[in-house]
Length: 245
Image 1 (tube, helix red, strand yellow):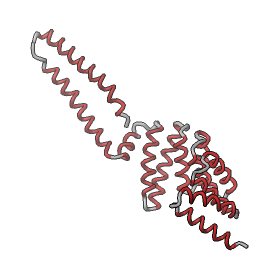
Image 2 (cartoon, one colour; image 1 turned 30 degrees about the vertical axis):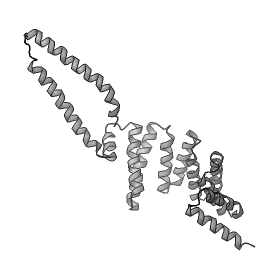
Image 3 (spheres, one colour; image 1 turned 90 degrees about the vertical axis):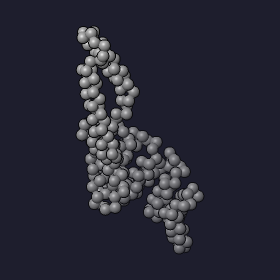
Image 4 (cartoon, one colour; image 1 turned 60 degrees about the horizontal axis):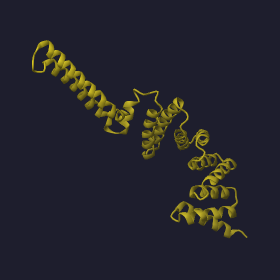
């Protein structure tokens, strides 16, 4: 997976190899007093060339696609956080695109196992903790999702996505107070972010504060009038307020 980093160093190795063959050729010719390069030199060079050719052809099979590459490399790098994370991301993509719910869940579970292995090796990567929050949320384990988003927030408090998603997770558990606390923190970071404004509006509406929720839906509509879900929330909130005396 990281052989691309060996391109430049390999030039030095090849120079040493050529120099070594050159010295060997001179020594053999001095001893045998022959003008032509010895057959042994061609045999050695040929064997080296065959070995590298076989290695290159065999390695090329692993580059068929991301899954083949990362699943091949993980066999040799089980204790490497990035190797586990790279393979996990392939399973995430498979899960996101899966139509069958059982297959989707299976892919997400595989991704979770690999990402948990990655953070066990090196826990200080906020992006992995964030993705674990996403995955646990997708399989309905919202308590675990909240735990991972909290870890990601501790490491990277400026990432707005964490505040949006942790608020959704608290909302799924019916913990609207905690959800509002986190989304308000997100509002301080990105006061005009449409998802933040929409989430505040939704939470206020769920608590029965329709008049307070309405301005947030209106702000989102101004920012992104093509957001159909927000448009529905806006129209529904307005209709409820019109029915009130």
